[in-house]
Structure formats: structure tokens, C-alpha cells
Image 1 (cartoon, protein in one colour):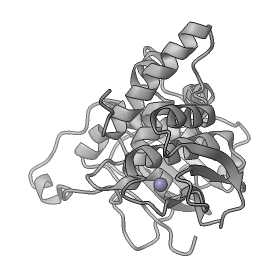
Image 2: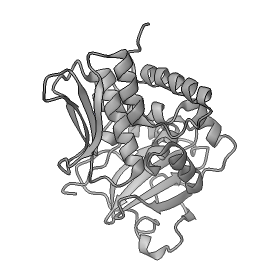
Image 3: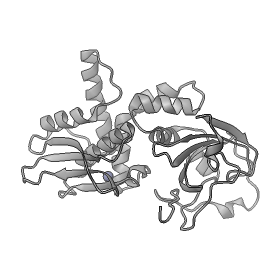
Image 4: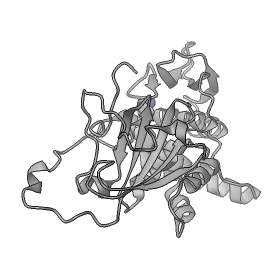
Length: 305
Ligand SMILES: [Zn+2]
């Protein structure tokens, strides 16, 4: 049997096996149980290099997870998440990410790989970018496209919908929103806020193409003063949802902001929905055309955080 070579290819290959197995046993396919899948599949397909350890360890706070060869030189591998992570969704995504490294990168990295929390957020595929490849694999494995599309078909976009996706696939709400941003034709953006500042943000392709995005910069950008995210303490409703007049968020348009607290409580997650039609472009706008961007262009890292 010819084995896949791409992140999407591997995820689809495993999804087929999982679907067959669950259909045969009348079991629910979701959420995908990464640990038994990793050990069973690797034992059968790569008997010389099986994954024999899947567990939480006390890693440095810098890292969410790692892929590690057995210290005994037996050819066995372990995939590990940081015990400090309490969110089930983040643990599941981390294991899938490390399984992606095992399938795609263990030959390139015989000493294993250690992955930061930031690495888990680098979703933009680019050649040679192994963290993005591991995330693409995890995203397609845990949230297969046809099922994901079926879940959102005909639904209003809301935090309730994102929570449903997060429960179904056992991923964080952030991961569910990033997946949705990857495939939507809507103009939308996720903004992660921390202590009054923008930690990072990402636009959907249609929003990006209309020129609305936060560019990665060295300086610190405060959350807009009138945004929900800037004053989360004012909103006792767990699902704050308002339409802002133009001029609050980037782009000279009305913007609907839905805001919730992240799993790490000091963090806010805002989902911004823009009108479907971008405002007509004016003469000279082309001068401001964003340059070709890479995975980090849309990240807004707050120094010292
Ligand atoms: Zn990684």
C-alpha cells in the first residue's frame, strides 16, 4: 500500500480507517480518540517505530507538547502533552499535532520535536513549515471537512455554533474558529485579547483580500476602547454580542463582535463578522495593498507576555 506524504493526505487516510472501524462497531466517530489511534496505527503500519507512549508530562511552560524517541534506542516513539494544560480540547489538539509530526517529520527529526503554544497556532501552510503542517494534519484529522461543513450548513454564525463544534470535535473554541475561518466565504476575523491588548489576530481570506487585517508588528496594539474585549468585566452575559458602528474595529464598516473568555481566563476571544460586501475601493487604494504575507504576518505578538 502506498502511504500518504502530505498533512491532508495522512489525515484523510486515517479518517477513512476511523470511519470504517466506527461504522463496523456502531460507535460514534467523534471526537476522534487520538491516543488509541496513534498506538494501534503505528504498531500495525510502522512495527519498527511504533508509538508506545501517549501521556501528559511536566514539561517546561514554554511547551505544549513533544514528539520524542525512546531514550533506550528501541526505535519506539512517544507523544506527550504538557500536564499544565487543563483544557481537554487543547490536550486533544496537541496529541493530534504530535501524531502529525510523527507521520510527517520523524525521519527529518530523529531527535524528536518540542512544540510551543505559539506553534499550535501557526495554521498557514507554507512549504517546509513543519509546525503549520502538523496543525493542518491535526485540523483535518479532528475536524474532517465534510463533517465540519455539514455541521455549519444553514446555521447562523454564533459563539453557540463554535461551542457546538468545540464539543463535537473536542478542540478549543479557538481551534474551531480557526478551522471555520479557513473555509468560510464570509469576511471575518478572530482577535485574541489579553490585558487590554491584542495578543494575536487572524482574518479569513475574503476579509484579508479586502485589506482588513492586523499586520504583525513589533509595537503593542491596544484593543479598541469601545470593543467588548476591552471591557470584559462589564458583560455578565457569557455570550456578549453587539453590532458596533463603523470606526471601532479596523475597516470603515459596521462590525458585529461576539466575545467570550478563553480557557485561560485572562484571555478574551472576539469573533468579528463584517458585512459580506466590502466597501467599493477608491482610487489609490492599491497603493496600500498588503504585501505577500506569510504565516506570521497576521500574528500580533505582545512582547513580554
Ligand atoms: Zn509541533
